[in-house]
Image 1 (cartoon, one colour):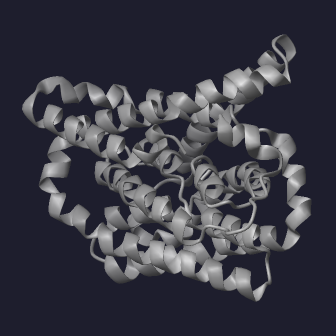
Image 2 (cartoon, helix red, strand yellow):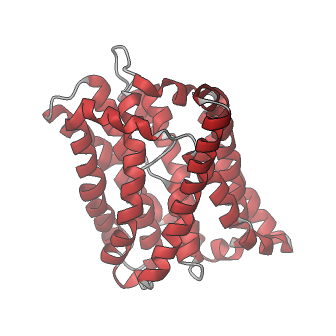
Image 3 (cartoon, rainbow, N blue to C red):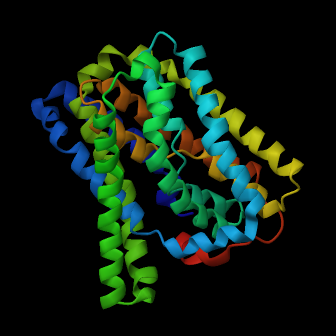
Length: 328
C-alpha cells in the first residue's frame, strides 16, 4: 500500500474541512450543487473500469467463504445497521438513513488493498467484487424502504431512478471503456496502463466530491455539527461487531488463514462513494443524509488500516488472479 493509499482518510478530511471553510466564508459553495453528482459519476466509472467480470469464476474455489460473506453482508449487516440506528439514532431520522445507506453497501474498491496488506486471498476477494456490486444494485432500494421506516419516506420510483443513475450509468460506461480498450489496445494494456491510471484518479475525485459537498452544505453542517457527532458511537459499534463476528464465523467454519482475512475485510469495509451518490440523487432535499455519509470513510479507513495489521495472516498470502489489480 503506497503513501497515497495510507493518507486517504487524511485527504478526505482535508477536503471536507476546506470545503466547509469555503462554503462558510465565500459564495462559491453554492456551485457545489452542480459538481457533486458529475464528479461522483466519473469516480464510479474509474472504480468500475478496474473490475474484471471473469474473476467471478474464482468464487468456486471458496464456496464456504462466499456463502459466509453473503450471509454476513446481506442478512446480518442490515440487521446490525437497523439495530444501531434504531438504538442510537432513533430521534435523528436523517442520520439514521445515512448510517443505513453506508452500512448496507459492501465495499467495491479499497477493501482489496487492505486484504492484500493483511495477506488475505485477494483473488477470491476480487471475485466477490462484481457479485457484491450486483447485489447492492438489487437490494439497496429494498433495504431503504423496509428498514428505513418513516424516515425513508421516498417514492420507490425516485429511489430506483437514483440507483440506476449512480450505479448502472457508470457501470455501463466502464463496460464500454473496457470493451473498446480491449479491442484496440489488448488485455495486457488494460491491466498495466488503464487499471492503474483509473485507480490513481479515484482518491482525487472522491476528495473533489467531498469538497463540493461540504462547500455546498457548509451551513447545514454548521447547524447540525453536534448531531453528526452522534454518528460516532454507531460507527464504532459496527466496526467492532463485524470484525469480531467475521473472525468467529471463519474459525467455526475452519477457513484457512488467508480466507479468514478475506472474510473479515469483505464484511467490514463499506462502500461510502456509492452510498454518497445514492444519497445525493435520492434525497436532494435532505442534505444531512449525504453529509453524514462523509463521516464514514473518516472513521473507516484508519480502522481498516489497523484491522489489517491485527488480522494479518502469518503464512504466505494467496493472491490468486488479482495481483495485477492490487499492484495497480
